Image (tube, rainbow, N blue to C red; front, top):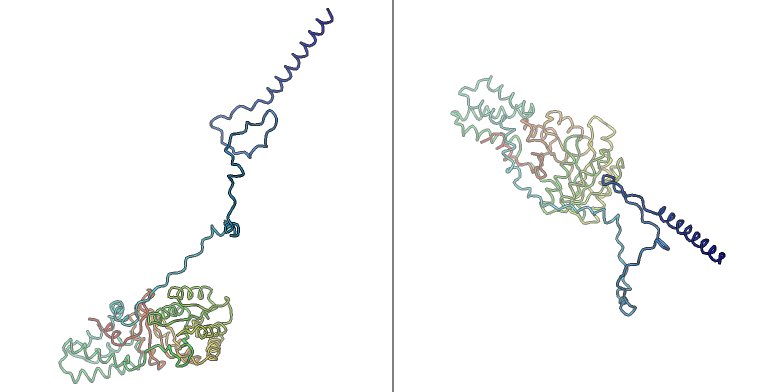
Length: 409
């Protein structure tokens, strides 16, 4: 009997010890207290799957039987799976530049007459004021000469104009303002020249495109003029290819290409510092292949004092002429440079056969006489004039509109 009681007591002690161990171990597995509300929230990576007592109760989810699962059709099985490229999705393709429609070139100088007149009026008004004096003595005629020379008309043209005015005023006798205006207008038109061919030659007469090369000194607006000339030609219904043969100025090719894209003209270009003659040759070659009407070649701005650069310009001309003769070589001059522009013109004329002149910034100078002086110096006409910063502010030169702007209303 005592043995049985002793066995029961030992069993109760053993059960109590085991219960204490279990309770102790469970207390150690309690979660740490929650962080205070002010503590920052930290996102931890997903925990490892639990096993045993710590496993979560599985959630009830609807399940489909094998009969309810549909198989893909034959077309769906054969079609490739579209995989979205995150890099391609982020990098949006640049929008194609919108093609502009330039305004017609005809009549541009007349439309811009007011802008031209604002800067040229001092010449016309000064001459009319002097000619209106009651007594035209030698001092007055000397003032007239000085006015013309200040406007960069040039010495020889000035002397010719003054002599003709002297004779006509003597014959006219009494001078009304309208008579003086008519007289001065006629004489200035004679000086500027109304019988010169001022059309830009863009037709070769062969099955090849017309080729126009644009030359000039740095800073005269040569590349911009080439781009604006492309707009003039496109406005007249011509297809144009641009040759970016100015490889010495880093932004020149980009600038020309931008001008071309705006009117749908393609630009042929090469590496920076590449051979200008090679690029000019390729531009004409592409123009022939595409059946373009005109190829415009923008050359690097040359300093007229740099013999090596001027020789290279002659090389560009010779290489291009392997395709056929150049139809037009336009010299771009800054009208504000005055007599210095004549020095530049002489040197360029010795290297290449200049056929026409483009005067830029004519609206920014009161020295409109440079039109007369440069024509007399080179024996070639002014064909285009720049009258502002706008894309369509390059206009065919019209002597009548120009002289009317000189004299004013």
